Amino acid sequence: MNYSINKTDTYHKKELDSLGWELTICNALYKENTVLRRFLGQDESFGRLLFRHLRGFIPVDKLIQVLEIGGGYGYLMRDFLEMNVSIKPTMLDISPFLLERQKEILKGYSVSFAQMDFLDADDYFLRGFELAVMNENLGDFPTVVGLGHDTLGLSSLDTVDPVLKKIIQFFERYGLPRPQCNPFNFNMGAIEAVEKLCTSGIPYIYLGEHSCEASAPENLKHLIKISPSGNPERIPLRGHDEYTIKFSYLEMIAKFYGYNTIRGSFADFIPFDINDRVYYALSSQGRYSDEDEIICQFVEDLYKYEYLLLIRP
Image 1 (cartoon, rainbow, N blue to C red):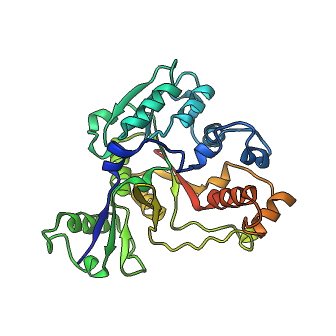
Image 2: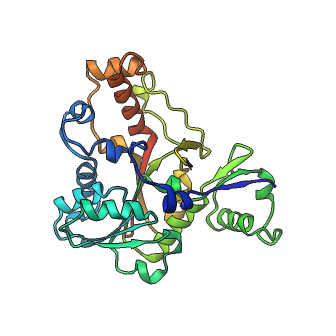
């Protein structure tokens, strides 16, 4: 039963000094008058687009106590604060570098900051929050890599290995379906994070990340090449690796704890038109110019990234 655990905590605590090379969708849409904002047809940032989308499901304009876990540079929360000035956010991040950037971006607002690993946060800390946000960072949490199907043939009483015992208990407790591939990877940290949020009773939870189950809509499959593997996949980055997320498992856990769920792709709230310019970039797979490549990659990411909104009835 050989396996490894992919972790990023040391990197984020001690080595991370920029997100400039890791272009998240949120960061890509932050600056005004960029190529990406122009082709969207509206000069809007990620946070504002997400805020408007959430309005259709939850009373986001009336929320006050909001927790953002892994807030990057703070762009998303600044957008939220501009849309709802009553928010009193708490920014929790494992990275001291990113917390300092968040303090700069959110200067002038009433914001609390906490440096910690979210998986170490206790129940008392989570009390009172109305909305928790985890955007484009679930893939940073520990992923167990290279598990064999024989692992799932055991019961939690058959092994003394604490990691295998925990994984087996997740499958037993939540009735998670057996992975089709062998070996398989398991988003253990992401599952622990969602379990922690759900058991805390936070009424609204938003999750967004690169998915291993994403696919393009039927009318765009000839232009957008996405192959859902169903198995969390490695994303090599500077100084660390991340893994894509199996959202169906997270959705099952949320439902186990009584949450209603809304799931979709980022394209649900980041609209774009397949005009001649975009069609050319997609059909050429971005081969003919840097701008074409940027557009092509961005549109693909709008479908590769999924969101999951949890709502406690």
